[in-house]
Image (cartoon, rainbow, N blue to C red):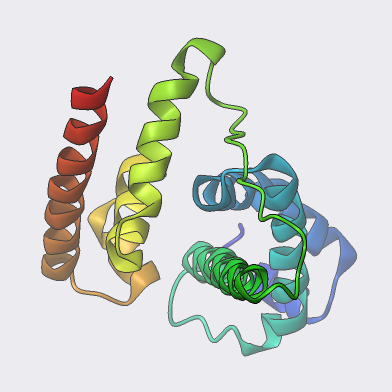
Length: 189
């Protein structure tokens, strides 16, 4: 139903029940996808709301070239990555302000907070998420879409606008980089 022309037409007419259905169907996917990137529940909740606001505002631009779910994934990952870039830029600015004495606040290190990880596994999960966060953006997104979200290479290629061959290369390099980083973690622990 969500991919039907009728449903999309209802969304474009700003039909409340259609948007409620869209929210019901995709809220967990959006939240979990964002949580994989930002690794903090409150930020993931806030960004999930931002994603649905963007969907509401831009549904008229949905042309149907891709599946609706693919379009939503693109908005989700774009929103999370934009937030991440702004956060990194803010940290860099605060760092330089601290260096020259303009800002007295210390930049606090964000705590690892992922609800799907049991207490016993927090240390390993922290190492994995840290290693993931250090991957180049395209490798990380490809890896998360395929390995964490469980999407097919075809679905991920549509979301990322990349060929399947290109995705295979990204996944291979991501695995190599993760193996290297996680080997260092296990050697030190």
